[in-house]
Amino acid sequence: MCNCPAHWAEADLAGAILLVLGYGRPELQAQRAEYFALQQDIAQLESDLQVALAARDGLFGISPDDDDGVWFRIKLFKSLVLARLGARHVLSRTIPNLGRITPQNYLDILQRFIDHWERVNAALAPTPLTLGVFTLADLQTLATALQAKITEIDTLQATLRIRRQEREQLFGDEPEDVREATSIVARLTLYHAVIAATFPNQPLADSLPDIFAPETGTSLPDFSFNWIVLLNGDIKLWYVPPSPALGNAVSLFLREGAVDATSAVTSTNPASTPAHTFSGITLVGELDELELHNAAGLTIARGVRDASLPEPI
Image 1: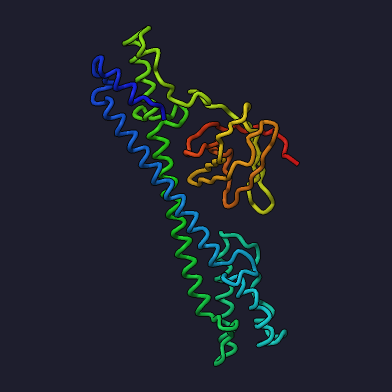
Image 2 (image 1 turned 135 degrees about the horizontal axis):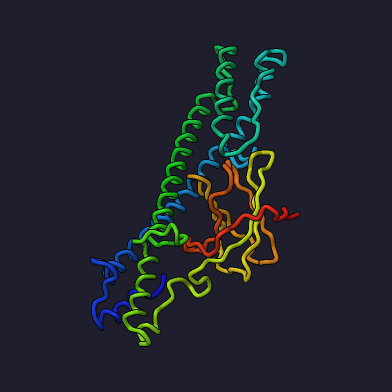
């Protein structure tokens, strides 16, 4: 954010500057404090989300060999059912398949095994099936814990989307046609105009600080991108970084409806065509937004789809 409060303090010495009734330098400072509070809140939410995602995946297991996860347990289910009931038993012939293992499928996978295990235990009564010391009750407890963690993640993601939108609206990091008139950028744009008109050819007008970093200016660069839907339903997306390269780009930000997703930038070389894959997203028509963000989460370039951009090999 520009050093406008300090410049405004100098302008106020020449006569208090009000942009609109009730909005002067103290109100700008209050908005700046609110913006930085939002930044801190977003950073904490992002950290909490990463912890929750890791905990969710830890409960299920990051691989079939991860003996801390339930995946490791249920992979033993088939062989023990066959051993206890025999290969000809109907329950031995209808053992659930793990299927495609994605976070979106964790609960469905566990529920299939819970339902089948209940039938197996009924058939084996009064000696239920156990996977070593791991029981059906343990699986049910884990499924409940996993559901709670997924609910926590959904809440964190929803709150994070709202906080990011609040930050964008407050700062005005949006195209001019949707920028709020009360945003910081809108106020600072008006401040520039008022100072230039009030102090023409004077040091105060000549020393107006840039609203945006000189690298991006007031008009954000565009970059070309394209996408396809893969057979498994994932979205594969590739783009050409803006020229010259934006070395401070750290994340690729995608928005489709109420869903936000980010992916770490892999290259800012304009000669490259980085590709990213996003899961759990269904595109309706065109993608709503694709942006490059800096470390502060601010937009430094906006994507424009080019349907002719070839998929990188």
